[in-house]
Length: 334
Ligand code: ATP
Ligand code: LTN
Image (cartoon, rainbow, N blue to C red; front, side, top):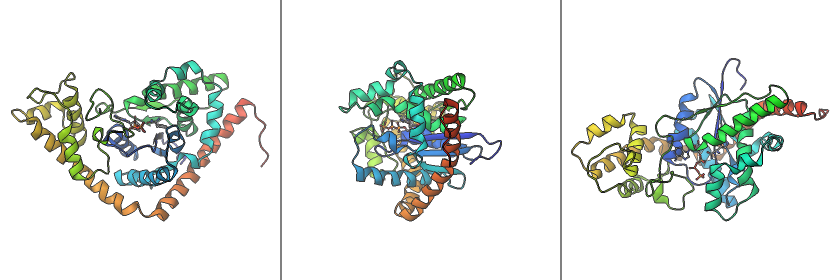
């Protein structure tokens, strides 16, 4: 960390549910491609995941599993830091300060809060202030760029507003982060309900493809994916199910929607779905093989997280000390 002249990338995923192809297409794929040009920090945001009910032993295993999946997908620990959010206490410390410059009206407008409040009984304060913790994640590392799916745009705008507000109230302290959202595939939809987004914590596993799903499961889920009663394979926004499947096809092959339409002239939905399933199965195979090699090596994963946390804390402390000084706290004698 702290290479002069190199810009910073920061992003994170909360360890709730199984990582899905939507998380890969919307976020992870870009995380990987940004590693050479930027200094990257990729978080497993375990503090955020507590806003949804968790089984402690499962959460612990899932965090290890996410680290192994980040690595298996191509996050290179030589180039990027993989960090568990709770290992760097500065995240929660900065959150407090940012809480004091966040207006309740801003949080009331957050669509993720509104959506999640409808879905779960436990509408806790953490769910409400979730975007402030996310802003801390980003601002703590002075990130320039934040690769996320389209659903996170509103949260990112809040992070920018808080950075601008703090800088204005005190003096320039935080870098103003920019979102980095893919042009295509920024919003992958559910396979059974193409009106709502694919979500890894969905109760119905038929709605998503997990990165660790077995080939026969992937095939079955795509075959069952909701389409429509037409026959032609056309990229039409109004035919939501098919539109979504073409987006997934495009994300995994690099082919444009026009090219895909041409390839399937005169063919049936079932041909298209089977091909798509095969493409995704082939893409996930090396990831799953690599995952199986590293997931059980807890010693290696722990060591990697230890190094990640140490390096991250250096930068985090630097920013937090600055913030504490600016707001008028007495410097702690060391
Ligand atoms: P949860 O259901 O637990 O909220 P999620 O699948 O919505 O999970 P997040 O942890 O909220 O995933 O997001 C991780 C990353 O994946 C974020 O960058 C987010 O923007 C991206 N992402 C989530 N869902 C989609 C989607 N349907 N299409 C594209 N990107 C997505
Ligand atoms: N809120 C994000 C996860 C997240 C995040 C971040 C993303 C937490 N902290 C910092 C980018 C940068 C979500 O996807 N639900």
